[in-house]
Image 1 (cartoon, one colour):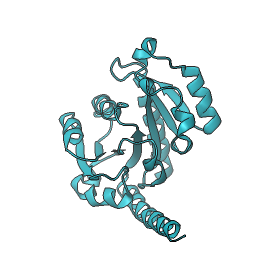
Image 2: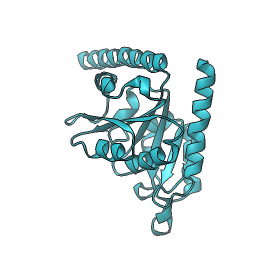
Image 3: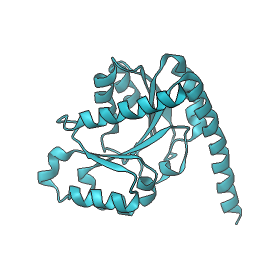
Length: 222
């Protein structure tokens, strides 16, 4: 029983920090998207392409969550985005307080759009609100067809699933229609877009989604 209470206390503390973050984001007019996936699904490469495609439309920042190294933050900085790195040193998810600690590195007043690239994991990140306005999940073809049903909490709490690496579909036993049906079963309000970041297939649909949520958010805050 004590362990459950501690867990509830930790989540309550995180939720308070997340609410504080959200107030800051809204104060500065920054739309925040939490990007989650397994390791290697293609989150960072997706963000690199997104920065290149939308960098003339939005002032973009990225918070990178990893167990160690500055590699991913350096990659997105090279594309022209402001970036801050969080190294969790073994923790399998980002927490709102971690995000708050690095916000001064980004200068929120200089941003329109902030992506938080969470630690690669399909379990832990889904339970932690970071103060974001939207959540997306990147799933990749090599991971297999069973991930949506095996990790339902992740997909229950995501608004958009980007199915990456469809360029390798001929080499894997992956049924896209089944993935769409599984997502519909878990979360009827979510949407799946098949993409290939490497081949730049269907990325315009992803960019259009960003434009749409940003336009709605801006209008609501006007």
